[in-house]
Amino acid sequence: MSYEVKLDIFEGPLDLLLYLIRKNELDIYNIPMALVTEQYLEHLEMMKALNLDLAGEYLVLAATLVHIKSRLLLPAEEGAGETEEEQDPRAELVRQLLEYQAFKEAALSLGKRTLLDRDVFKRAVVEEEVPDGPEEAVMEVSLFELIEAFRQVVERMDKEDLLEIDTERISLSDRINEILEDLSREKSLSFTDLLKASRTRKSIIYTLLAILELMKMRVVRAFQSDPFGPIRIFPAVEESADG
Amino acid sequence: MDDMRSVVEALVFASDAPVTVERLKDILGETDRKTLLEILQDIELEYRQRRGGLCLMEVAGGYQFRTKAEFAPWVRKLRGVRPVALTPAAMETLSVVAYRQPVTRQEIEKIRGVDVSGSLKGLLEKKLVRIVGRKNVPGKPIMYGTTRRFLEVFDLKDLSELPTLREITEMEE
Image (cartoon, rainbow over all chains, first blue to last red; front, side, top):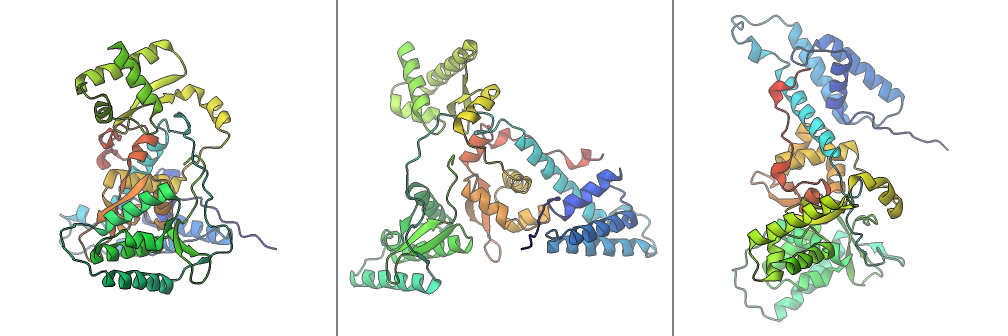
């Protein structure tokens, strides 16, 4: 059996680049591209050799570095002397690096605050014991089954002959947040109940779209316990005990 | 006044989430905002002078009793679980959302230079980040913002209390 070791040493290509600049004590406004590019590529080789997860973004920045380096080698255009500062091919990269660095520092200082449940604690709230997630053999519901269930609800509604008054102003993000809030209380929701709770056809559609969006974002999952059984919506990952 | 003080103390203690002055006002009826704030300050001072294990904190727009940071090692033992630490990646994503909200995933990725769907999902699950709407550009991407829970966890009264981002100009080293 072989194990693939995956380590995240750097938070991304920009982080690696910042590390190289700091390590070599370079001026961020005047980066020697040849040196940095060479070391950056060396690191990529090393990470590859270590079998580290080398995301595509690292290669994109590698290409950018090589591109900037080649542009620096080209003779400056005639009459470009005045606006040399602006035409420095490194300018955009520097801006990006500085912006990233600002947020990296902000993240560190946020982490140093007195955090709830790490440094300070509030009264423990007793969480209700709810079986988290389905227990018997359950299957994940496919898109088609969702649509079928949706069709059934709408069909039933049509027979009730609804008077539709379009005064309700709802948005998809409102509905998404409502469903997320309901889920945080209930742990799981019945798909048909969710749809039935909607009064107008428009809000039914918004409900369906909200559920589909949440499934796409992998925030919720839909399960049923038997082929034509009721479909229930669950949060994708059970929450940790301390909430 | 003293009775009122005890009631307020009881209410703050019994509340799960930081209790707001408005909420106290709803419950207590007649009392005005100013009096309530005075009472809360009074309780805060009392707890400070007592030098006990608790303090009254103003956080996420409300008030909450919390244990003092110096007693964390013992309380952690009591809770028996290691605090769920956020990874550096999650912290970076969170700080971009906090400072740039409302912000789309694409905008966060542009700043961090990496895919952030994983860390964003984790933050949504931890209820530190929520969906606040859709941006009115082609594709209507979802916009994210921070929650009250974020303020509660990071000991912030409101978003204006976030430390200012270091100005880009003073960032040379």
